[in-house]
Image (spheres, rainbow, N blue to C red):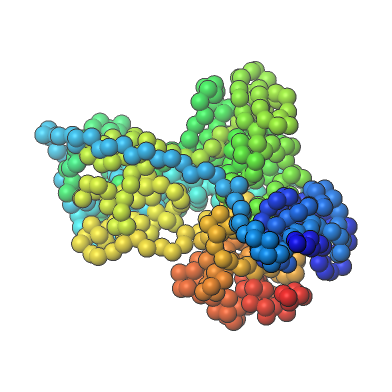
Length: 588
């Protein structure tokens, strides 16, 4: 006969009456050893209570909002060994319900390639279409390998979206936001600066100067390599011809080989009025004014980064996200510290809510919402639409070159970054997720080297992602959501930054470093960090995955003290059972 077993809150130190902020299981669920049952939130950090045994959940005794202490009943289970005796096999029903469903991508069969027999203005060995991080890297590497290179860029300066209206200007403004918030946080510790005076003109000029220094540097590098730079919008005429349109007119370039690095555009929402108060990410970086209120449509990385900037500059910010979570697909324990912080700062965070209508009025933009708990219509001074990006494969008439393009504008490639047309390669956003500059640069080098006749392939084991919010969130490799969905036998080591001297000295104890390990090989398979400089810290764990490092490799590497980087070693030690900076009871 099956015997029920009570699962209670274990020793959680000096904490009592701790809030339950998440319940991860329901009656009837099957659980395995170390699965998270509930998440508790103390004044110091959030922590998961893992399952001490495998089995089937008979009854859950807590709900979100309850308070518990050591010894409080969480749930009762029928242990796995008793299920086996009753001939009821334990079925792993864990499903990562928070993962966004994969986008279905239907390949568009390549059309018959176009033909061109008109005047050709420029002939080149290699044409690189797009001068963003992937494009200019490809052009520079190809030139270094001896190819005659022509680089086509729609912007007046090199650098593409990332450098001109993306990565660099946004991080500049995020630094300004960080300075404001850090100064504000020191008020309670006896250092008071008063309310900051915002000079938008000077702030814009500083941002533009930083962008200008980098674009000027790229221009010099292109000239040193004798790369022919052509400004204009490029579209294919045939597999070996590209038409360039600019203010100076049209010209046609004949090419022997091509690397497409034409990137992506901000996705739009249908039905929005044509009103200058509705911004995309590029518009939001211009800082033409500081509106009284701002609605950010989209709770992903881009939307939350710009929300960070405008909030610090004194704007009342609201965020609306269609899914039930901010930053869908990212592990909840990483997002939780960010969500807790911005919930106290922003006017509203609306999750599981859809924008159904926007009406332009003299007083502002009236927005109507739909969803459980959706508020009544509200008027906002400005709206930022940040609902993702769409690849430019269709916009560049790639099918006229005979290139296969999906209905999302993505160009499929092989590991050599080669399209279905042998002499044409594609890299960066236009080949699909993840749409990240650092991925594009590595793809650009591969494409350039293959185009130059070298044997190369893109073989990255891991590509890191970073949200430059406050706190920053960075992750790499397998997420915990993915590990559960795929049935991976994994373990994890977690180190809360509330126990980090360096973090406390920064007046930030809401961070965490968490590493996932393969229980069979012991190697690092994924990691996540939340806290200041998380984007800088994640690189060590990218390298750990690339090198096949295990917990001992990371933990026995001497890290400087006191630093945030030592939290990486301590998370590895937590998994390995050698951590002394926290008391973690041994598993039975």
